[in-house]
Image (cartoon, rainbow over all chains, first blue to last red; front, side):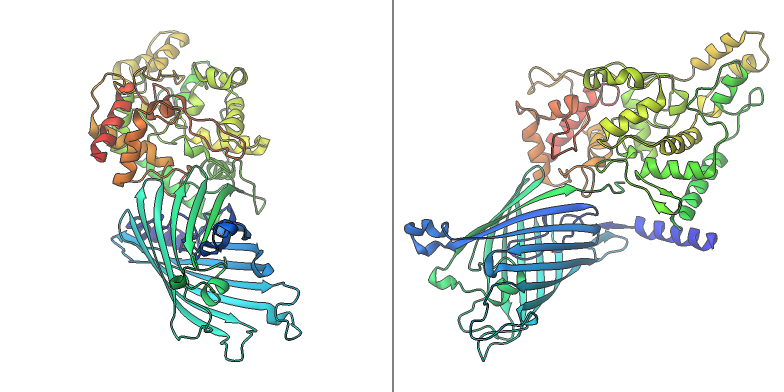
Length: 279
Length: 333
């Protein structure tokens, strides 16, 4: 038994030593609205406060949307370096969400190369509005929506990272008779490091099967990311108000061409809740 | 399972280390501590001459990872922020054990692929007689009084202050002492001359005299002196930097903590933007200037306990700071 274990350890040491992983493809676990391939390091709790304001085109009376704020408070935790779980609550639709994100593969160079980092994201959201669908009595199960995403990213160079996000959204109940329960969307994101501590990012999700409701739009957002000691600030302009995937992928109400742009931001702060092996 | 793997690796490392080394024996002893005892010196209370393999395994885990398995259960981390090996190597760090020479220590680190860290190595820690020496008093005040002459006290000070963790339990300290005792200096490491070996073996010199000979081969304490920040940061220390040496300081020193996933939030990679940012911070007149950070470090703050320890002159000379500056400036341009 000891010989087998020693052999396996030796094999692992040999193979691992020939492989160098890319790190920090994205600085944070979010890009603009959506998730990046990054997971929390083991033992790290990430506290996230997100705000999305009203539309800029509401004018000065609404202070260009600032009078109308929604918030999500969330806490993510790195169970291991490759598994993060999180909980959050949004004032938008009074929604609770929980998720798990698993990093399956890492981009690597050296003798053993792999071109991408691959993670998957799985979330459940529960709408707790008193009457989410006034036309009918709402069962608990009808309040639930699910999202599954595959996140495939590549750090192209020190400055540029790109990501694809094939996404599946399922809503147990939809309002319109013609509305689809399932939305299949393909997201794309890019991040460019402008200086040591700040970067530009952009994100877009495209409804692949053209199943969005007529008054719903593909979400697009541009962001500026600033990294400080222990915090990451992500400021953004986009047409979505929802801060969780089932809302911004499937239920974005802002029409960019009509100027329906929302300002918003995420602020994240990491806390080390337990130690870990550093070397 | 983890215990089996650790013991296996530890065993292999110890065996391979011993196999490479011809055994020098004087008066029936192969270790510095053993010979000193034969010469009439009392063994220090921190030294474990009869090491227990389970304790050594637990000590190894605690030093390298900050926790271990005890009674089939995972213990809690000593610190959330650091492990002992964040700042200490466990290997020999100097070719010449009788003098402090940062340049030769760096050469040794390059040759042996060691990290270039701010604290003294645990190799030979049980052979030393003082810890938290000299100017550490400026940082830790009267806390060093108990620690200076007592390895156990210095370990507790390190656990609670330096690594911002908790007080260690007795069994943890004991395990670490067993592990540290396996890192003791052997006579072979000292490079004792043939003439001195003869005197030690057969000479009519008193035991005190023979102990004196042994003292001349090994520094019993690591001096620690705080360096000044240059008054004019643009001029620096007025020494020409060697970018090649600076590269080694950056890679083996800075990046050991400032790597992605490392102890620090601030990642110092090899990108142009990082070097340009560092270059801008060299001459900046604030506490994040390269000179200030290296010579004064930062302090643990409420809500952000991680901090950077200062580098003493013995661990990073003024010349090496200028070497680092030269490398950063070269990479930024």
